[in-house]
Image (cartoon, rainbow, N blue to C red; front, top):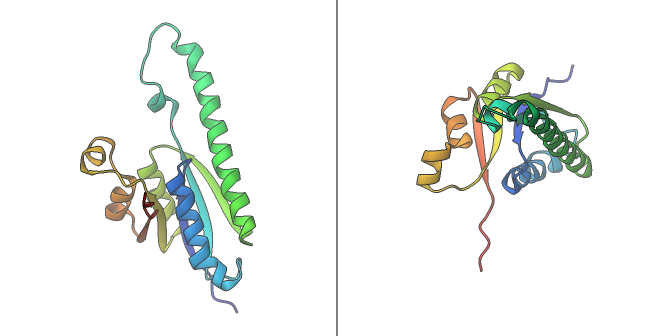
Length: 161
């Protein structure tokens, strides 16, 4: 009887850092084994922003704008997940589960770790400085402190000018 694969969750968004984290992970954890023969089951998770978080005003015209914003958020989520699936297929990784979950990325990713009993969570790093991180919050920092798994933060190397 074959041993059950460990679960790896990767958080993706539309950022270049997220794409790099996915590429790096596939190259280092899946390619050496020939794609689907890797010791991990791959779950790709995209956190779709809630409309109420994207539109923080109420007043005249709010009812008309909300469906437009919701449609745009769904379109973005579909684009991000389709791009991730295509990229996985290009690296011969076809046994992939892709999920779109509405909510704050920090909570969505930590919940995905719990739901799938993941042994590792992979996130990209935007490389914010201390001030931006304090204002915007850091998904990777939050996950490193709250996810009940190993958390790997993949940083895109800075290009030298």
